Amino acid sequence: MSHSAQPTASLYIDGRPVEGQGAALAVHYPYTGEVIATLHEASEAQVAAACAAAAKAQPAWAALRPVERGRVLLRAAALIRERGEELARLETLDTGKPIQETRVADWPSGADALEYFGGLAATITGQTIPLGGDFVYTIREPLGVCAGIGAWNYPSQIACWKAAPALVMGNAMVFKPSEETPLGALKLAEILAEAGLPAGVFNVVQGRGAVGAALVTDPRVAKVSLTGSVSTGQKVYAAAAEGMRHVTMELGGKSPLIVFDDASLEDAIGAAMLANFYSSGQICSNGTRVFVQDAILPRFLERLSERLAAVKIGDPLEDDTQHGPIVSAAQVDKIRAAIAQGKAEGARLVCGGPGEGAFVPPTVFADAGDDMFIAREEIFGPVMTVLRFATEDEVVARANATPYGLAAGVFTRDLARGHRVAAALEAGTTWINAYNLTPVEAPFGGVKLSGVGRENSAAAIEHYSQLKSVYVGMGAVDAPY
Ligand code: NAD
Image (cartoon, rainbow, N blue to C red; front, side, top):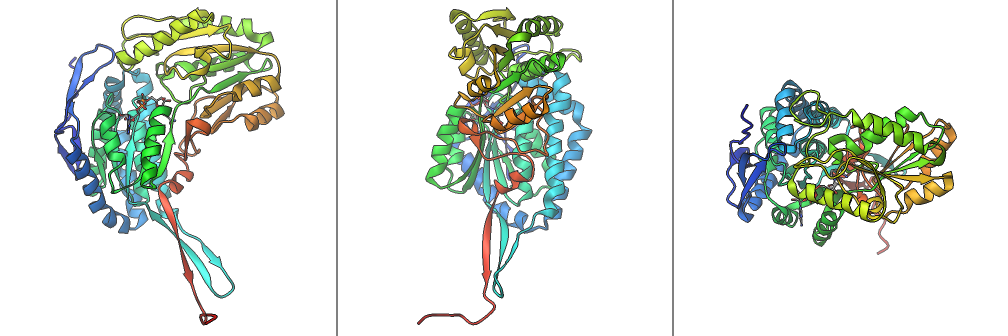
């Protein structure tokens, strides 16, 4: 079967597909390496044109009744659900992730966001603040033009998570997907248009970092929401600061998953596998430092190895494939270098290893020290580092000894300990007896170097709006002159 996925055009500006005028951008299917589409980056003039289109369309969009904006999002969510299979296939071709994942996690969670914020639209209101006669009321206003910049691991989910709260608040958006996975955002633009979104409200530009940088500093852009690595986040945050732009930064992590010896072992192992190997380990919130308490460590490693031996690795378009290729050759090289460093620093390879071609199998290191590279740095691949611990105080201190703070998990049957540890962990999201579940109803985002702002939940609205206070004088003006 042909894997061609050539879109009508590379960009989507002012309600129309437009070909990019910049450098060529080959899109590879990670499993076979074949080129499935050739796109072109946006030129600087096209980035400016997209921002101009957004600025022009935004006031009329913001002037609609919120419930009408919400309806467009709800229609788009329904279209996504109708086309689930076609969209899952495209996401698999773009990312290499197993279709059993892209069917349930990627576009479906994007549709969840469109439904959630579509439904929320009509409930967003200001406040009235009584002052004994005089009063103040607040208006929650859109920011204007928002820039969205995405990573390659969940391209369509990221586009939806940013577009849904932005658009429902009456903003317009220019979105730049990752150069590795540019196809899903173009589909979202088409689907939103079909659902009735006016031209110019959601635009897509393509390109590498330089195109993202041009977008961030366009004078029309009032807010930048980035999903990416910490180093990119630092550059984008700094560039945004010059224009005092609002930011949301969804960045990387090195999250801890703590397994106490009273935990349900099978559940903890299942969660540790989800926390390290889903999407071939290319997930920002992954619990890649798995702290296991002394008494259960041998049994934990034994059962983990047994369960990993049964994982089906292979063709991501086959229904039963559980572990697919890595997104790009460059990322494969990075992961293999980290595995080599783990071995060189003396950690014990329990299973997995560098793999071949585009594949890195689920890999587990044990007997690792906290100072090793594999225990400190985000690898963004299927590499779990297991660390031994003895006491609660010790493990909490070690878990927090990182500059990152995206997520954390704790497995225990002791109710009080679960809540105590969850409270003590420095992370934006903490799971108790679960891992990597990110429902749209719950705020998601990092602390420390892992980011600022929150996506999902009603909290996201605050990051796509600003408050105006209107003071109403009801009596005579008391001037001392
Ligand atoms: P990346 O930082 O290399 O790129 C992210 C995006 O930023 C891409 O679209 C890229 O083109 C763009 N970019 C690069 N330089 C830029 C610049 N100077 N100005 C503006 N844009 C620029 O990240 P990646 O390799 O695509 O994704 C992996 C990283 O993303 C990991 O660190 C992962 O943890 C993180 N991530 C975080 C979340 C989250 O929600 N917290 C989700 C997914 C991925």
